[in-house]
Picture (cartoon, rainbow, N blue to C red):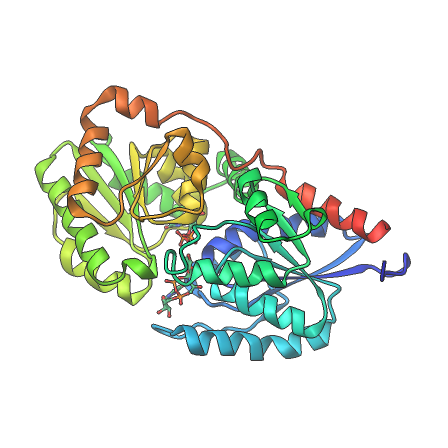
Length: 384
Ligand code: UD1
Ligand code: UDP
Protein backbone atom coordinates (compact mmCIF):
# COMPACT_ATOMS: atom_id res chain seq x y z
CA UNK A 1 0.00 0.00 0.00
CA UNK A 2 1.02 3.61 -0.53
CA UNK A 3 1.30 4.70 3.12
CA UNK A 4 4.28 4.82 5.41
CA UNK A 5 3.21 3.62 8.85
CA UNK A 6 4.62 6.80 10.41
CA UNK A 7 2.38 9.08 8.36
CA UNK A 8 -1.26 9.60 9.08
CA UNK A 9 -3.74 8.71 6.36
CA UNK A 10 -5.24 11.90 4.95
CA UNK A 11 -9.00 11.85 4.42
CA UNK A 12 -11.03 14.56 2.74
CA UNK A 13 -14.80 14.27 3.26
CA UNK A 14 -16.75 16.34 0.72
CA UNK A 15 -20.46 17.11 0.78
CA UNK A 16 -22.83 19.89 -0.19
CA UNK A 17 -26.52 19.37 0.63
CA UNK A 18 -28.64 18.70 3.72
CA UNK A 19 -29.06 14.93 3.24
CA UNK A 20 -25.37 14.40 2.44
CA UNK A 21 -24.45 16.32 5.61
CA UNK A 22 -26.82 14.25 7.77
CA UNK A 23 -25.43 11.02 6.36
CA UNK A 24 -21.74 12.09 6.39
CA UNK A 25 -21.74 13.69 9.86
CA UNK A 26 -21.41 10.36 11.73
CA UNK A 27 -18.58 9.35 9.38
CA UNK A 28 -16.71 12.59 10.11
CA UNK A 29 -17.05 11.82 13.83
CA UNK A 30 -15.98 8.20 13.38
CA UNK A 31 -12.79 9.20 11.53
CA UNK A 32 -11.99 11.97 14.03
CA UNK A 33 -12.24 9.36 16.81
CA UNK A 34 -9.36 7.50 15.10
CA UNK A 35 -7.15 10.57 14.96
CA UNK A 36 -3.98 8.55 15.71
CA UNK A 37 -4.40 6.90 12.31
CA UNK A 38 -6.22 9.54 10.28
CA UNK A 39 -5.94 13.22 9.58
CA UNK A 40 -9.49 14.13 8.53
CA UNK A 41 -10.66 17.33 6.89
CA UNK A 42 -14.14 18.36 5.79
CA UNK A 43 -14.87 20.31 2.62
CA UNK A 44 -18.37 21.61 1.96
CA UNK A 45 -19.34 22.84 -1.48
CA UNK A 46 -22.35 24.53 0.17
CA UNK A 47 -24.53 23.57 -2.76
CA UNK A 48 -27.10 24.18 -0.01
CA UNK A 49 -26.53 27.00 2.48
CA UNK A 50 -29.12 27.43 5.27
CA UNK A 51 -30.27 23.81 5.10
CA UNK A 52 -26.66 22.61 5.28
CA UNK A 53 -25.67 24.97 8.06
CA UNK A 54 -28.58 23.68 10.20
CA UNK A 55 -27.07 20.19 10.04
CA UNK A 56 -23.48 21.31 10.67
CA UNK A 57 -24.63 23.21 13.74
CA UNK A 58 -26.52 20.25 15.20
CA UNK A 59 -23.64 17.80 14.70
CA UNK A 60 -21.02 20.36 15.81
CA UNK A 61 -18.97 20.18 12.61
CA UNK A 62 -16.83 23.12 11.47
CA UNK A 63 -15.71 22.63 7.87
CA UNK A 64 -12.04 23.09 7.02
CA UNK A 65 -12.95 24.32 3.53
CA UNK A 66 -16.22 26.11 2.66
CA UNK A 67 -16.60 26.73 -1.08
CA UNK A 68 -19.83 28.70 -0.45
CA UNK A 69 -21.19 27.95 -3.95
CA UNK A 70 -24.98 28.15 -3.58
CA UNK A 71 -26.71 30.71 -5.79
CA UNK A 72 -30.45 31.45 -5.80
CA UNK A 73 -32.30 29.13 -8.21
CA UNK A 74 -28.99 27.70 -9.39
CA UNK A 75 -28.69 25.58 -12.51
CA UNK A 76 -26.95 22.26 -12.98
CA UNK A 77 -24.46 23.48 -15.58
CA UNK A 78 -22.80 26.23 -13.57
CA UNK A 79 -23.09 24.36 -10.28
CA UNK A 80 -21.24 21.37 -11.75
CA UNK A 81 -18.54 23.56 -13.28
CA UNK A 82 -18.13 25.66 -10.11
CA UNK A 83 -17.68 22.56 -7.94
CA UNK A 84 -14.99 21.03 -10.14
CA UNK A 85 -13.05 24.28 -10.55
CA UNK A 86 -13.31 25.23 -6.86
CA UNK A 87 -12.15 21.84 -5.64
CA UNK A 88 -8.84 21.98 -7.55
CA UNK A 89 -7.03 24.27 -5.06
CA UNK A 90 -8.48 22.37 -2.08
CA UNK A 91 -7.22 19.04 -3.38
CA UNK A 92 -3.84 20.54 -4.27
CA UNK A 93 -3.53 22.20 -0.87
CA UNK A 94 -4.47 19.23 1.31
CA UNK A 95 -3.33 16.37 -0.93
CA UNK A 96 -5.71 13.73 0.44
CA UNK A 97 -5.04 10.00 0.16
CA UNK A 98 -8.77 9.24 0.30
CA UNK A 99 -11.72 11.38 -0.75
CA UNK A 100 -15.19 10.44 0.48
CA UNK A 101 -18.34 11.44 -1.39
CA UNK A 102 -21.93 10.55 -0.64
CA UNK A 103 -25.01 9.57 -2.59
CA UNK A 104 -26.16 11.17 -5.82
CA UNK A 105 -26.17 14.96 -5.82
CA UNK A 106 -24.33 17.26 -8.19
CA UNK A 107 -21.72 17.67 -5.43
CA UNK A 108 -21.26 13.88 -5.36
CA UNK A 109 -20.75 13.56 -9.09
CA UNK A 110 -18.54 16.64 -9.57
CA UNK A 111 -16.45 16.00 -6.43
CA UNK A 112 -15.77 12.39 -7.37
CA UNK A 113 -14.59 13.56 -10.80
CA UNK A 114 -12.34 16.25 -9.30
CA UNK A 115 -10.89 13.75 -6.80
CA UNK A 116 -10.19 11.33 -9.64
CA UNK A 117 -8.44 14.08 -11.64
CA UNK A 118 -6.29 14.78 -8.57
CA UNK A 119 -5.38 11.11 -8.15
CA UNK A 120 -6.85 10.36 -4.72
CA UNK A 121 -8.57 7.06 -3.96
CA UNK A 122 -12.26 7.88 -4.16
CA UNK A 123 -14.79 6.26 -1.80
CA UNK A 124 -18.53 6.31 -2.39
CA UNK A 125 -20.87 6.17 0.59
CA UNK A 126 -24.42 4.95 -0.17
CA UNK A 127 -23.19 3.26 -3.33
CA UNK A 128 -25.16 1.16 -5.78
CA UNK A 129 -28.66 2.62 -5.52
CA UNK A 130 -30.37 2.42 -8.89
CA UNK A 131 -33.80 2.85 -10.47
CA UNK A 132 -32.43 2.02 -13.95
CA UNK A 133 -34.36 5.04 -15.28
CA UNK A 134 -32.01 7.88 -16.14
CA UNK A 135 -34.78 10.49 -15.83
CA UNK A 136 -36.09 9.37 -12.43
CA UNK A 137 -34.79 10.66 -10.16
CA UNK A 138 -33.30 13.44 -12.30
CA UNK A 139 -30.36 14.01 -12.31
CA UNK A 140 -29.54 11.71 -9.39
CA UNK A 141 -29.63 8.36 -11.23
CA UNK A 142 -26.92 9.58 -13.59
CA UNK A 143 -24.96 11.34 -10.81
CA UNK A 144 -24.66 8.14 -8.77
CA UNK A 145 -23.90 6.00 -11.83
CA UNK A 146 -21.03 8.32 -12.77
CA UNK A 147 -19.74 8.32 -9.18
CA UNK A 148 -19.97 4.52 -9.16
CA UNK A 149 -17.85 4.30 -12.31
CA UNK A 150 -15.22 6.66 -10.89
CA UNK A 151 -14.94 5.43 -7.30
CA UNK A 152 -12.34 2.94 -6.08
CA UNK A 153 -14.31 1.75 -3.04
CA UNK A 154 -18.07 1.39 -2.70
CA UNK A 155 -19.97 1.31 0.60
CA UNK A 156 -23.41 -0.10 -0.14
CA UNK A 157 -26.28 0.16 2.31
CA UNK A 158 -27.87 -3.19 1.41
CA UNK A 159 -27.26 -6.44 -0.48
CA UNK A 160 -29.57 -5.16 -3.24
CA UNK A 161 -27.37 -2.12 -3.84
CA UNK A 162 -24.23 -4.31 -3.77
CA UNK A 163 -25.75 -6.58 -6.41
CA UNK A 164 -26.49 -3.56 -8.63
CA UNK A 165 -22.77 -2.75 -8.60
CA UNK A 166 -21.74 -6.34 -9.30
CA UNK A 167 -24.12 -6.27 -12.28
CA UNK A 168 -22.10 -3.29 -13.53
CA UNK A 169 -18.93 -5.41 -13.28
CA UNK A 170 -17.55 -3.54 -10.28
CA UNK A 171 -14.96 -5.70 -8.51
CA UNK A 172 -16.65 -7.45 -5.58
CA UNK A 173 -13.63 -6.87 -3.31
CA UNK A 174 -14.08 -3.12 -3.62
CA UNK A 175 -17.67 -3.25 -2.27
CA UNK A 176 -18.67 -3.45 1.39
CA UNK A 177 -22.26 -3.71 2.65
CA UNK A 178 -22.48 -1.45 5.69
CA UNK A 179 -26.09 -0.40 6.18
CA UNK A 180 -26.96 3.23 5.59
CA UNK A 181 -25.13 5.87 7.63
CA UNK A 182 -28.48 7.64 8.02
CA UNK A 183 -29.34 5.10 10.70
CA UNK A 184 -26.10 6.05 12.53
CA UNK A 185 -27.26 9.69 12.31
CA UNK A 186 -30.76 8.83 13.49
CA UNK A 187 -29.39 7.03 16.57
CA UNK A 188 -27.07 9.94 17.39
CA UNK A 189 -29.98 12.34 17.04
CA UNK A 190 -32.36 10.23 19.15
CA UNK A 191 -29.77 9.98 21.96
CA UNK A 192 -28.99 13.70 21.88
CA UNK A 193 -32.64 14.78 21.81
CA UNK A 194 -33.52 12.63 24.83
CA UNK A 195 -30.57 13.85 26.93
CA UNK A 196 -31.51 16.14 29.83
CA UNK A 197 -29.47 19.15 28.73
CA UNK A 198 -30.91 19.23 25.19
CA UNK A 199 -33.22 22.21 24.65
CA UNK A 200 -34.65 22.91 21.23
CA UNK A 201 -36.64 26.01 20.40
CA UNK A 202 -38.12 24.45 17.25
CA UNK A 203 -39.42 21.40 19.11
CA UNK A 204 -41.02 23.69 21.70
CA UNK A 205 -42.70 25.67 18.91
CA UNK A 206 -43.89 22.45 17.25
CA UNK A 207 -45.45 21.34 20.54
CA UNK A 208 -47.53 24.54 20.46
CA UNK A 209 -48.46 24.00 16.80
CA UNK A 210 -49.56 20.37 16.94
CA UNK A 211 -53.16 19.61 17.73
CA UNK A 212 -52.95 16.27 19.56
CA UNK A 213 -56.59 15.45 18.86
CA UNK A 214 -55.90 15.31 15.09
CA UNK A 215 -54.01 12.78 12.99
CA UNK A 216 -50.74 14.38 11.90
CA UNK A 217 -49.64 14.03 8.28
CA UNK A 218 -46.05 15.14 7.68
CA UNK A 219 -45.20 16.20 4.12
CA UNK A 220 -41.90 16.95 2.36
CA UNK A 221 -41.03 17.25 -1.32
CA UNK A 222 -38.38 18.63 -3.63
CA UNK A 223 -37.58 16.32 -6.57
CA UNK A 224 -36.70 18.13 -9.79
CA UNK A 225 -38.82 15.76 -11.91
CA UNK A 226 -41.85 16.82 -9.78
CA UNK A 227 -41.32 20.56 -10.40
CA UNK A 228 -44.23 22.12 -12.30
CA UNK A 229 -47.22 19.83 -12.86
CA UNK A 230 -46.10 17.29 -10.25
CA UNK A 231 -46.16 19.88 -7.44
CA UNK A 232 -49.49 21.28 -8.64
CA UNK A 233 -50.99 17.78 -8.42
CA UNK A 234 -49.43 17.16 -5.01
CA UNK A 235 -50.77 20.46 -3.63
CA UNK A 236 -54.23 19.76 -5.04
CA UNK A 237 -54.26 16.37 -3.29
CA UNK A 238 -53.14 17.91 0.02
CA UNK A 239 -55.78 20.65 -0.27
CA UNK A 240 -58.57 18.12 -0.81
CA UNK A 241 -57.36 15.80 1.98
CA UNK A 242 -57.20 18.73 4.41
CA UNK A 243 -60.53 20.28 3.46
CA UNK A 244 -62.48 16.97 3.47
CA UNK A 245 -61.00 15.63 6.71
CA UNK A 246 -61.36 17.87 9.71
CA UNK A 247 -59.71 15.27 11.96
CA UNK A 248 -56.41 15.67 10.09
CA UNK A 249 -53.59 18.18 10.49
CA UNK A 250 -50.95 18.52 7.76
CA UNK A 251 -47.53 19.95 8.61
CA UNK A 252 -45.28 20.69 5.66
CA UNK A 253 -41.71 22.02 6.12
CA UNK A 254 -41.26 23.50 2.65
CA UNK A 255 -37.91 22.97 0.89
CA UNK A 256 -36.15 26.28 0.08
CA UNK A 257 -35.89 25.61 -3.66
CA UNK A 258 -37.94 28.45 -5.27
CA UNK A 259 -39.44 25.90 -7.69
CA UNK A 260 -41.01 24.30 -4.62
CA UNK A 261 -41.66 27.38 -2.48
CA UNK A 262 -43.65 29.23 -5.16
CA UNK A 263 -46.32 26.62 -6.00
CA UNK A 264 -46.65 25.34 -2.44
CA UNK A 265 -47.19 28.75 -0.84
CA UNK A 266 -49.44 29.87 -3.71
CA UNK A 267 -51.70 26.81 -3.57
CA UNK A 268 -51.70 25.85 0.11
CA UNK A 269 -51.50 29.01 2.20
CA UNK A 270 -54.53 29.97 4.27
CA UNK A 271 -55.96 26.46 4.59
CA UNK A 272 -56.95 25.95 8.23
CA UNK A 273 -55.48 22.52 8.87
CA UNK A 274 -52.37 22.89 6.69
CA UNK A 275 -49.34 24.43 8.36
CA UNK A 276 -46.52 25.47 6.02
CA UNK A 277 -43.22 25.98 7.84
CA UNK A 278 -39.55 26.54 7.01
CA UNK A 279 -37.27 23.46 6.83
CA UNK A 280 -36.68 22.04 10.28
CA UNK A 281 -33.36 21.27 11.89
CA UNK A 282 -32.61 17.53 11.88
CA UNK A 283 -33.56 16.80 15.52
CA UNK A 284 -36.84 18.71 15.22
CA UNK A 285 -37.68 16.86 12.02
CA UNK A 286 -36.93 13.49 13.64
CA UNK A 287 -39.11 14.51 16.58
CA UNK A 288 -41.92 15.42 14.17
CA UNK A 289 -41.58 12.15 12.21
CA UNK A 290 -42.04 10.33 15.50
CA UNK A 291 -45.18 12.35 16.26
CA UNK A 292 -46.74 11.81 12.84
CA UNK A 293 -49.48 9.36 11.88
CA UNK A 294 -48.21 9.02 8.33
CA UNK A 295 -45.63 10.65 6.05
CA UNK A 296 -46.11 11.76 2.44
CA UNK A 297 -42.81 12.56 0.72
CA UNK A 298 -40.59 12.28 -2.33
CA UNK A 299 -37.45 12.26 -0.18
CA UNK A 300 -34.86 9.52 -0.34
CA UNK A 301 -33.65 9.88 3.25
CA UNK A 302 -37.13 9.94 4.75
CA UNK A 303 -37.90 6.60 3.03
CA UNK A 304 -34.97 5.15 4.98
CA UNK A 305 -35.68 6.75 8.35
CA UNK A 306 -39.44 6.15 8.56
CA UNK A 307 -39.33 2.31 8.65
CA UNK A 308 -36.97 2.57 11.65
CA UNK A 309 -39.59 4.69 13.37
CA UNK A 310 -42.53 2.48 12.33
CA UNK A 311 -44.20 5.20 10.24
CA UNK A 312 -46.05 4.43 6.97
CA UNK A 313 -44.75 6.37 3.97
CA UNK A 314 -46.50 7.30 0.72
CA UNK A 315 -43.79 8.15 -1.80
CA UNK A 316 -44.71 10.72 -4.44
CA UNK A 317 -42.52 9.16 -7.12
CA UNK A 318 -42.96 6.64 -9.93
CA UNK A 319 -39.77 4.73 -9.07
CA UNK A 320 -37.54 4.18 -6.09
CA UNK A 321 -33.94 3.12 -5.69
CA UNK A 322 -34.87 1.93 -2.20
CA UNK A 323 -36.98 -1.18 -2.90
CA UNK A 324 -36.38 -2.86 0.48
CA UNK A 325 -39.10 -1.02 2.43
CA UNK A 326 -41.53 -1.27 -0.51
CA UNK A 327 -41.00 -5.06 -0.47
CA UNK A 328 -41.61 -5.07 3.29
CA UNK A 329 -44.89 -3.19 2.74
CA UNK A 330 -44.16 -0.08 4.82
CA UNK A 331 -43.48 2.24 1.88
CA UNK A 332 -45.91 2.63 -1.02
CA UNK A 333 -45.25 4.43 -4.32
CA UNK A 334 -48.11 6.77 -5.25
CA UNK A 335 -46.47 9.01 -7.87
CA UNK A 336 -47.87 12.51 -8.32
CA UNK A 337 -51.36 11.51 -9.43
CA UNK A 338 -53.78 13.58 -7.33
CA UNK A 339 -56.41 10.83 -7.02
CA UNK A 340 -53.89 8.14 -6.12
CA UNK A 341 -52.39 10.31 -3.34
CA UNK A 342 -55.87 11.04 -1.96
CA UNK A 343 -57.05 7.39 -2.20
CA UNK A 344 -54.04 5.88 -0.43
CA UNK A 345 -54.04 8.60 2.24
CA UNK A 346 -57.73 8.00 2.98
CA UNK A 347 -57.12 4.25 3.12
CA UNK A 348 -54.43 4.82 5.74
CA UNK A 349 -56.68 7.19 7.67
CA UNK A 350 -59.79 4.99 7.63
CA UNK A 351 -58.65 1.35 7.33
CA UNK A 352 -57.02 0.22 10.54
CA UNK A 353 -55.74 -3.12 9.24
CA UNK A 354 -54.08 -1.40 6.28
CA UNK A 355 -52.55 1.19 8.63
CA UNK A 356 -51.22 -1.52 10.98
CA UNK A 357 -49.69 -3.46 8.08
CA UNK A 358 -47.79 -0.36 6.93
CA UNK A 359 -46.56 0.76 10.34
CA UNK A 360 -44.42 -2.23 11.27
CA UNK A 361 -41.14 -1.18 12.77
CA UNK A 362 -38.14 -2.60 10.89
CA UNK A 363 -34.61 -1.68 9.84
CA UNK A 364 -33.89 -2.67 6.25
CA UNK A 365 -31.32 0.12 6.04
CA UNK A 366 -28.97 -0.87 8.83
CA UNK A 367 -28.28 -1.06 12.54
CA UNK A 368 -26.38 2.17 13.11
CA UNK A 369 -22.86 0.72 12.71
CA UNK A 370 -22.21 1.69 9.08
CA UNK A 371 -19.53 4.26 9.89
CA UNK A 372 -17.58 1.89 12.15
CA UNK A 373 -17.49 -0.61 9.28
CA UNK A 374 -16.29 1.99 6.79
CA UNK A 375 -13.49 3.18 9.09
CA UNK A 376 -12.36 -0.40 9.76
CA UNK A 377 -12.34 -1.14 6.02
CA UNK A 378 -10.02 1.82 5.36
CA UNK A 379 -7.76 0.80 8.28
CA UNK A 380 -7.53 -2.75 6.89
CA UNK A 381 -6.70 -1.42 3.43
CA UNK A 382 -3.92 0.71 4.81
CA UNK A 383 -2.43 -2.23 6.74
CA UNK A 384 -2.12 -4.33 3.59
C1 UD1 B 1 -30.54 19.00 -4.16
C2 UD1 B 1 -30.01 17.78 -4.92
C3 UD1 B 1 -30.90 16.57 -4.69
C4 UD1 B 1 -31.14 16.34 -3.21
C5 UD1 B 1 -31.68 17.61 -2.59
C6 UD1 B 1 -31.82 17.42 -1.09
C7 UD1 B 1 -28.87 18.05 -7.07
C8 UD1 B 1 -29.02 18.33 -8.51
N1 UD1 B 1 -29.99 18.09 -6.34
O1 UD1 B 1 -31.77 19.41 -4.76
O2 UD1 B 1 -30.28 15.43 -5.26
O3 UD1 B 1 -32.04 15.27 -3.06
O4 UD1 B 1 -30.76 18.68 -2.81
O5 UD1 B 1 -32.59 18.45 -0.53
O6 UD1 B 1 -27.79 17.82 -6.59
N2 UD1 B 1 -31.90 26.67 -1.56
C9 UD1 B 1 -31.77 27.63 -0.60
N3 UD1 B 1 -31.17 27.31 0.59
C10 UD1 B 1 -30.71 26.05 0.86
C11 UD1 B 1 -30.89 25.06 -0.12
C12 UD1 B 1 -31.47 25.39 -1.33
O7 UD1 B 1 -32.16 28.78 -0.78
O8 UD1 B 1 -30.17 25.81 1.94
C13 UD1 B 1 -32.50 27.04 -2.86
C14 UD1 B 1 -31.55 27.90 -3.72
O9 UD1 B 1 -32.31 28.83 -4.45
C15 UD1 B 1 -30.92 26.86 -4.66
C16 UD1 B 1 -32.11 25.97 -4.91
O10 UD1 B 1 -32.76 25.86 -3.64
O11 UD1 B 1 -30.40 27.43 -5.84
C17 UD1 B 1 -31.81 24.62 -5.48
O12 UD1 B 1 -30.80 23.94 -4.76
P1 UD1 B 1 -30.13 22.63 -5.46
O13 UD1 B 1 -29.14 22.04 -4.48
O14 UD1 B 1 -29.63 22.95 -6.79
O15 UD1 B 1 -31.34 21.66 -5.69
P2 UD1 B 1 -32.28 20.92 -4.66
O16 UD1 B 1 -33.64 20.92 -5.23
O17 UD1 B 1 -32.07 21.46 -3.31
N1 UDP C 1 -34.99 16.69 6.98
C1 UDP C 1 -34.69 17.69 7.89
N2 UDP C 1 -35.55 18.77 7.97
C2 UDP C 1 -36.65 18.89 7.20
C3 UDP C 1 -36.94 17.86 6.27
C4 UDP C 1 -36.07 16.79 6.17
O1 UDP C 1 -33.70 17.62 8.61
O2 UDP C 1 -37.39 19.88 7.35
C5 UDP C 1 -34.05 15.55 6.86
C6 UDP C 1 -34.65 14.17 6.86
O3 UDP C 1 -34.73 13.65 8.17
C7 UDP C 1 -33.69 13.37 5.98
C8 UDP C 1 -33.15 14.41 5.02
O4 UDP C 1 -33.43 15.68 5.58
O5 UDP C 1 -32.61 12.85 6.72
C9 UDP C 1 -33.78 14.28 3.66
O6 UDP C 1 -33.46 15.38 2.88
P1 UDP C 1 -34.14 15.67 1.50
O7 UDP C 1 -35.50 15.08 1.48
O8 UDP C 1 -34.00 17.13 1.25
O9 UDP C 1 -33.18 14.94 0.46
P2 UDP C 1 -33.11 13.45 -0.12
O10 UDP C 1 -32.98 12.51 1.00
O11 UDP C 1 -34.34 13.23 -0.94
O12 UDP C 1 -31.90 13.50 -1.00
